[in-house]
Amino acid sequence: MMARYSSHRSDDAIKAQIKKIYYASMAAPDPQYWLENCRFMYDVARGRVPYLADVVAHLVEELKGCCAQLKMAQAICLEPTGPFDYKKTIDDDFALGSA
Image (cartoon, rainbow, N blue to C red; front, side, top):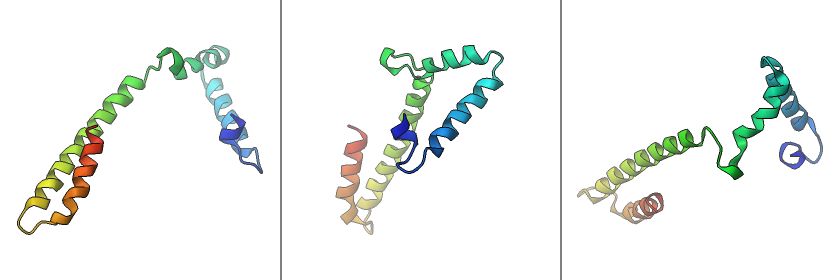
């Protein structure tokens, strides 16, 4: 945790993160209970991440939107005055998104 939230010169970032956790726990009706149970929000190893389904659903919708834009770009490239030279790049991007 220290390596992730602090720099080689200062521990200010980790101190700020600890303060955020402290203040969040103090805002809860039972701070000790909150601290003991907030770790379950990140229990990825056991597959118990309550917000993960929402994140995945959001990402799926974003990717659908990206694919729709790429399809439109492909169609524009094929128009008589369209930028045909970009079609290969767009096709490659579309292949990445649908893989």
